[in-house]
Amino acid sequence: MDLFTPQYPTEFISFGSGSSGNCYMLRRGPESVLIDLGVGIRSFKRYLHQYAVSPRNVRAIFVTHDHTDHVKAVGKFAAEAGMPVYATAAVHEGMRRNRFMTRKVPDEQVRTLTVGEPVEVLGLTFTPFPVVHDSADCVGYRIESPGFTFCLATDVGSVTDDVRRAVSQADYLVLESNYDIAMLATGRYPQRLKDRITGGRGHLCNDDTADLLATSLKPGVRHVWLCHLSEENNTPDLALKTVTSRLEKAGLQPGEAFRLDALPRTRPNGFCTLD
Ligand SMILES: [Zn+2]
Ligand SMILES: [Zn+2]
Image 1: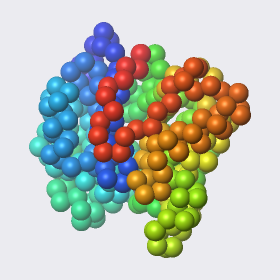
Image 2: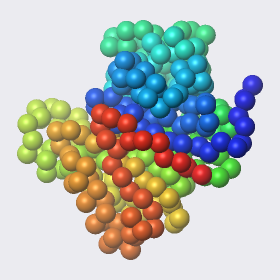
Image 3: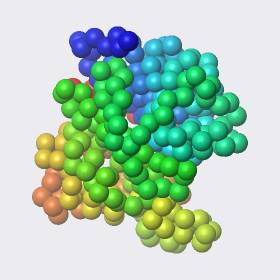
């Protein structure tokens, strides 16, 4: 039974974004939903306390994919607080195999998603779409309420039609901008890792993110957050500059027409009201 009451605005917060741990929350009044829970359980609980969110009022966890930086605390928190965990069958299987996920999702809390099939929680409709990435499977989410469409795509190996469509539908958008090509090329990562990142099933570089935004953003988009920035091969300034200059060439003015931010890697960004 959905206890959603419409007087509450929807708010978005990131508790961490990047290879040290990813976790996003949508909140409506006292109730909330998570997308990924890859930050440490103790930090996460501290954040809940700090923002006055009760663990028992977290109604669901939606998972993008089974890499540890997205799922580390999913099993532990789900087992303690008892909410359903939504992921594709392959991602659930990947979580069962992930040895860094020390607690598993209890069987009765497993909910299996199919791409393209919507699920409604808190009056928000979550529709997963496919994302190419080198995990067992990966999805992004289009989240709709009567007032807005919020889309999230992280760990984007390649820009596909599905990702492009999500970008073009979003009033609010969280999109990966992982690395700067030159920083990665000249950086100290081993070649094998560099190849993994750039090889079409890894991560999205600033230039590709910038191009995607410049060619596909919806007119009237309200806020874009760049996410999953690399600590080693990117800086928030560089990501924002690359995206801003490409958008300006396309005649778009971030800061005036809409807000553009880079999400902090290891701390919350504060709640932002969506409608
Ligand atoms: Zn990741
Ligand atoms: Zn990943």
